[in-house]
Amino acid sequence: MIELLTTDDIGVALERAMQCEMTNASRQQMCEQIELEAIAYVETEFITTLQQDRVLVVVQPNWHHGVIGIVASRLVERYGVPVFIGTYEDDQQIRGSARGIPEFHVFAALESCQDLLGKFGGHKAAGGFSLPAENLPALRSRLCEFANQCLEPQHLKPLLKIDAEVNFDQINQQLYQQLNTLHPCGIDNPDPIFWTTNVQVVEQQIVGKGHIKLTLSQIINEQQYKIKAIAWRWRDYFPLPPQVDVAYKLRENNFNGETTIELELIGVRLPNSYTKESIHPKLISQSHLFYASPSQPLRTKFQYNQRQYTCGIYQNACLPELRIKNPEGKVLVMHPGRTIGLLGTHREDAIEVNISQPQYDSIIQAAMQALSVLSEELGVGS
Image (cartoon, rainbow, N blue to C red; front, side, top):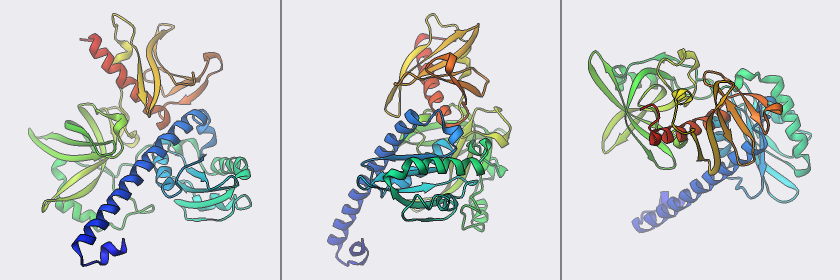
């Protein structure tokens, strides 16, 4: 990298730039693979206890410690809880990274476990640590205890705090420059989050490593206003419904000498679903499927995070319910309009879970999307 920045030889610079590009592509691929493995591990081992634990401690062998911090941030985004992730350096030693949520102090949590750790450091939002492998069960127990002391269940809900409602005709360079005076933004001074209702998804496509690139429009006084948007790592939610409310941050895009203001989506919902204070990130509903009367039952298989699931709409005591079965035989049951579902291998011993939590919401969205495709093929509701 130093040679790339200091050389006057164009040939050397090009060669070093290509090496950097190859290294970065390899890092991205490694990060994506570890993320998929971590999600599969969490949903197999911890999905039923996440609400009680209020923290994730994920340790697996053969992960590269150089990228697990990025994976930790993505798990925080997905599950809404603090994440401590690690990998084995050898049979005796674990090295890890931690990422938190606003109500959780990562460094204080590590301090509470210092007798179990080797080296550790960090700040409120993130940290790093090492420990003897034999101390892992005790560390997980101690962190769960710490999390339960400082976190309430409502802290784990991935709800967005909206700063202002804005229409597309108000979004321009002047507004963006005014927001620039608030920088630098960070944990105690976050980027403003805006909210726009009833916008139309004009175009959408998957780009890069599972991002959704969109064109959105809003009709104001019979005039159409369009704006570009990006939704990072939203592959699981593609395609979005044609009409949505959106929550977003503003970003400046410089391309080919042209500067435009774009949206970075961080939440969507169907119009008029809830009050603006409770926008749920990526919350999409297709509840009409529960009340359709298909000529044959709505039951299908679908892939989610490289795992095979089955799902279907069933009648239970005259009430429709969605059932999703994972490869291990656990079934998630939900009813339209209810936020509490059941999870277990048998209904008699199933536990109640809050299905608005991201680990359940995301799999429900994938199942409903699969059932929606099936219903179109069967002509349900047409």
